[in-house]
Image (tube, rainbow, N blue to C red; front, side):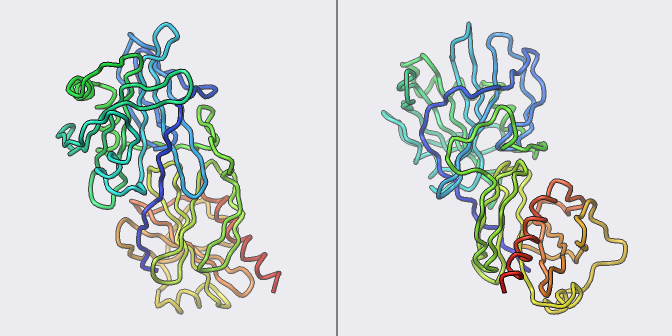
Length: 350
């Protein structure tokens, strides 16, 4: 299948960080919490000076926009906020992402070496909707390695209109919270998350996660399930496969490589692709009924395990592209069943 990772499209929309319902309160002693949209498992530092709350929001339109939000409050008043975004941004690389941030009175983008990464940094005034208005903000972005999702951070200094660029940089570099977020990103600290079902996450848009999408290569109309994830379809730039990228959460990264083959049986489908059956004893746990394990193939990065199902006179092959070999698909059962159902529906229409 020789899948190629495709860039996820994300658009940063400048909107108010309005308080959503049921945020998670981080204890004053700190602790490990998974950021629901990015999937980063952050060890929050102790902080008895402020009340720290975690929440998030997302929306779908022509692209996907999502962020985790960490608010700091004192005596019930918002005094600071951090937005955490990850992905392959429409603007481009880390520098382009920072330069595209909508800031007034901005100082030029500069480079910062910190936390073992090279950062693009820019600051100015961010205009919130509503009563907050313009607030001092610094924006930072870094990429761990080529083809790895960018980490984009917004740090808002609420109620401090005259924070200088030098002071912003100094305070960010000395922030235990920022250091903890970067450590999770840099050191691959991820956790399980189902963001669309998370009580502290809201959908800011009009499109639900369980919507019908077209896979252009195969022509399948897939009714995406309400499985806690946000899926985004994209056809391959070459070859005959479609992709469903799991954008929410970003980490751990996962894409489904979808191919439909006209064949009377699964082994015949493998043979038509020049692939051999997997070694005896190869197991992927929690496969839905009728699915069988296929060979591992080699994408341009990561690992790709494959599974297949005969649906009528067609074989549905799904490659599971991840950082490691996939050994359990319990959380993917709804999307796999939705893909199989789309073929059955297409078969019935002919």
